[in-house]
Length: 160
Image 1 (cartoon, rainbow, N blue to C red):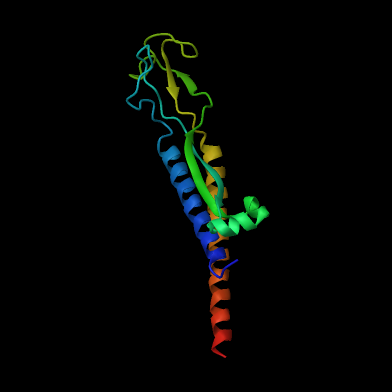
Image 2 (image 1 turned 60 degrees about the horizontal axis):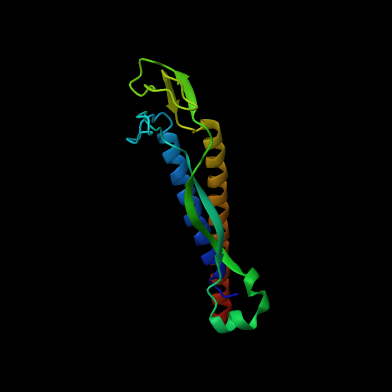
């Protein structure tokens, strides 16, 4: 494990949590977006769908020779990466409002005429995710600062 490995792991986590916070902010901003410009085959508007980030371990950047010699290399990872941003497939919230321009004009499975489909964004859930992401971000900032302090002390020892 090199001197900068802990810093690289922390910065990858900081980047991932920042993207997660951006997605949460986007979800909250679109909590009432009932029309994204898309329509169903019957012509009813499609509302905004909640987005979430999928994280995975970032593989180690060791050389091929090192990976070949080390049978445990499959278990090695150095940080986190965002594999993809996916849409939440939970059902939309329905509200009866036949005067709304985004109300269903044609009945479809799951949406009767006169009902408006609202995004599947739950403000409480988004706030909980935001607190979790910000705490994870703070923890990684602490680790990054500790790594910098450790590297600085190691350089001071080397001065003699």
